[in-house]
Image (cartoon, rainbow, N blue to C red; front, top):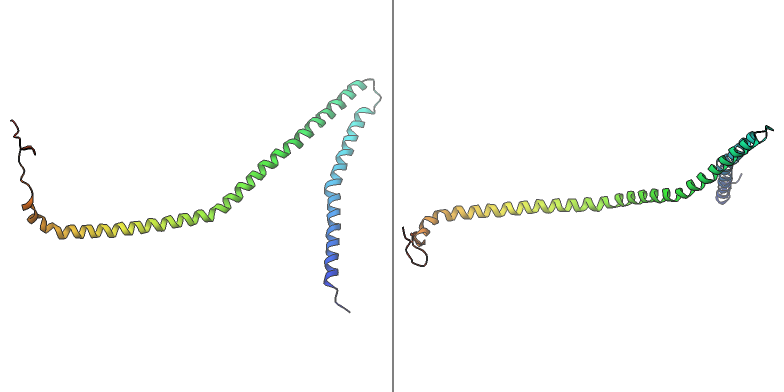
Amino acid sequence: MTDPNPTELRTQRRRSGADLHRKETRRHIWLPFLLVCLFLLFLILLVALPTDPSWRTRASFIADFMSSILIFCPAIICSFVFYMLIALGVYGMNRLHSGARSPLEKVENMTAKIATRVDETTEKINEKVVDANSRIASLTHFMSVFDQPENDDDPTGDKKEK
């Protein structure tokens, strides 16, 4: 016994896939279509065949039924385009949302790191300033000798009237 050729197996699978597709197309598309057509024909014949003198009423019923079918079906078909546009828009927004998530998370992490660094840097600067002020605090008493004396005079030298 020889092993089957892999190329032949693939072609058999393709053929069986094509046959399966044809069978499913017949079963899922053509069969319901033909059943609906037969049902409509049955309804028309049910109303039109009896030989009753009220044939005008039956003809009117058939005309009303067919006009509603011929008006609603094109309306549904035309609105299908808008429905598909809306569905594609929702799909596109979902893709954009999914695509923007990871870059936005990176930006969020980067800003959090920057905020942490800024907090650490300002804390260090505050410590240095407090340390410098505590060292200079003892000198401020001696530095007050150089301050100008407070008086009631204007800086221009004029005396205020009381």
